[in-house]
Image: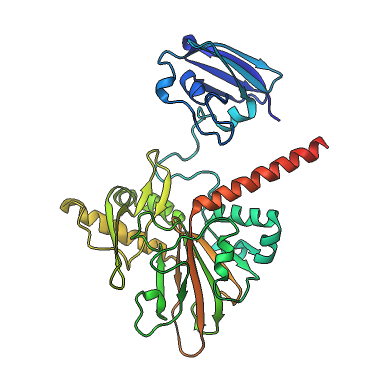
Length: 392
């Protein structure tokens, strides 16, 4: 466990500078420390939620004294309350916000947990067995971590029964029901309400960009697949955006700053619309999501006349990048197999098929917050088990 080696007060108590045993340092503001004090009067012991309002923190809050104890605890005395609070050294390291600049902090950056990829993932596409993940927490944790890292993963050994896809979602979260139902069929229809229900090839796309919020996870499972063709295609749109930013910065700027309109009119009682940029950035420039869907892009009515050409130039450039062979990973699902994509990041499509044979897939939606929550719990349990083994 990384311990503390020193602490000093800054600017008349407006903050502290902490040094760890490995030489790392970080500064913390007094108001931030007080707002995040781990005592039971400030944070609920049961769920960690804050029990005070920001108005309850004195405007003139300051660090009256700061002391390191046993190399692992930092004791702070706050004025004018004379409140004594103890912070854990590991917690401070994990939550420090005074960090050196990273190599890439330009708009479109992503965190270290995101690995962008291209065709090289073809030979190492993450995969797990449903049977193993259902009974082995380590296998499930590994699979969920791969989804977080790459935005896509496969699963094998699924029951060959209708609705089995729901059992996969239940491993980590909850189904997101839509107008398509709890889950939906993907098979050829005579008069389809959606192009997914034909044998046509589909350009890689974000699913349901016309929803607000968009479904953040999509799963597709295979029950039958004896047609010639119909291979699935996945592309890391975060990688595509990285290339766009490097090759055509003005196009990146247009797609990340101008609003696109997405629409879908279903059968009778369904009329869905959303307005979001094709490339969504956070306030600090982090790349949050990509919404790319040629079928669902509605008439653009919220872009000024003198910027419309810039949007279409950017849209064309991004579409061209999305279809580069070196970005695509393809595979043909076999009965009992499933793939999952982070629908805010990985676009998916399909090679066309025709003729004899049958192709029966089922799809479902879920949300990333459930996956991330389950993964966080499993990782915490694994860490605790490792620590217990060291102590033993």
